[in-house]
Length: 197
Image 1 (spheres, rainbow, N blue to C red):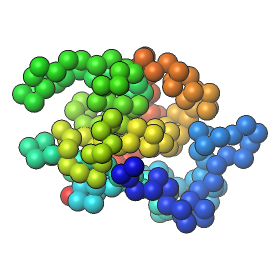
Image 2: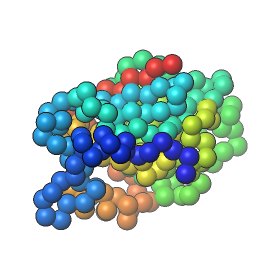
Image 3: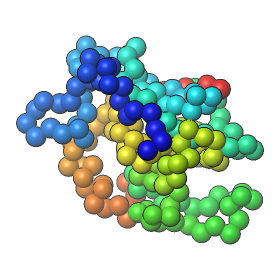
């Protein structure tokens, strides 16, 4: 798979632990007390084509992304993530490149928005899963940050947990089972995403 390791092995061992309560799984991500007191932030480098997840000053994960292709640049700057949609539908925008394309419902394998879309610039730009994982590390999107569907789910869980909307593992399992229905989450505490050239 064309991606940078989902969790940096050494940092994961030193700075990231999973909940140790009974029945906890990797779906219930928890950071150690010393690290979890700081804010969660995301940063993306368009040149390196990497998304980095930080808790306070500690890097806890890096992921390969696909960025905007020529003519469709990914915007740079600092953004606030306030909303996510699990199992998003895709409606072709009124743009020349989308002419002739048809809408795709949640769960449709031909839907270019896989698993979850994390809004960073309403209404046009998201971090989202893609079925075209071979595009990761390249410039192939229409301005969004594309990710491996499993990895974008991990990022969305971090964003929800630290954005004031944590959910138990059973909620994510239900979302997976109800893949043909959208599930909207509004964050109580916006998460910062900084995108640099």
